[in-house]
Image (cartoon, rainbow, N blue to C red; front, side, top):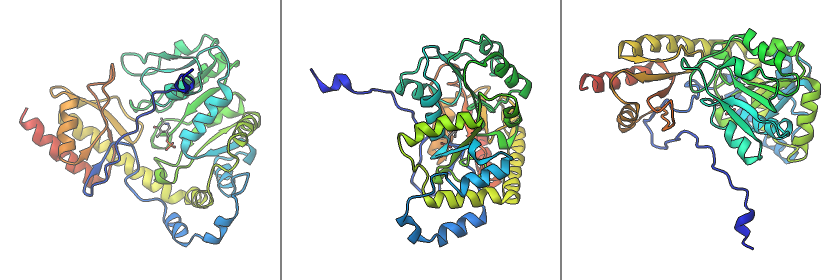
Length: 353
Ligand SMILES: *Cc1c(COP(=O)(O)O)cnc(C)c1O
């Protein structure tokens, strides 16, 4: 017997690069280019370190209270985690526990198949339609072991209409349906109102994009009391204290500053709309993004070439050598200044083509 035969092996998720050199224009991992709300910075500076002696609150207050108030639900319908990656991973572990395959798109957040693999969950990838929209009818058999829809989807940026999400819920009372709304604050429509009707729906969101707090690792989901109860049972069986005290306090402050949040999101959206015009003029096409990134392909120059060219100029965007999407770049919306630098670099390269 060789111990290596008993290792839980998995091909891990590959995150976008986090270059350490200064002066890089980082448009590759969909972070917000603006800082968190001013109150968050103040609290982070003034945090009373004496509190670190004690374990954090078991009910994740004050963060869970702030979220419950903001989204108009009771606190026992909110579950928080160390980024929505942690929340989604717990959801896979808790609810996808049958022999029937979990369904998600072939082109979507590439962590879904990794969680399915690591937990030995059967899954089936549903090809996106040629226009990159979700193939809604493929989710309506009612036979699934679970369903995960990123809406807006990544890396396409496209969102599906709420009635289509509701069709999926209507057809699937026998499994948990997860809507990953990492980008919903930038456009698209949240499935939160459907929670009143469907007790098998979980809506997952994150502080990493629209709330400028990727470095703090905060994510959450909202669902029926029953779903959240089952999630907590699994969480408490692994690590009862997932969130640290500074995150709970700073996260709550970010949620309370609604004005800053709205202002920041509006800035990103306006830069995105401008980017649609600039990139079109440069010969790119892309699905009409509702997120804080554009998924763009150029009519002449291969994406791989552009990716390397930009990286040499310290502009990082994301590129995957994967079927269907190898000729696309996912470009995170940065500040206007960062985007100007991107357009200038692209203009120079395209002039030489
Ligand atoms: C960024 C992202 C997440 C996870 O982000 P966290 O930083 O872990 O909250 C989840 N789903 C999608 C689709 C994402 O793009």
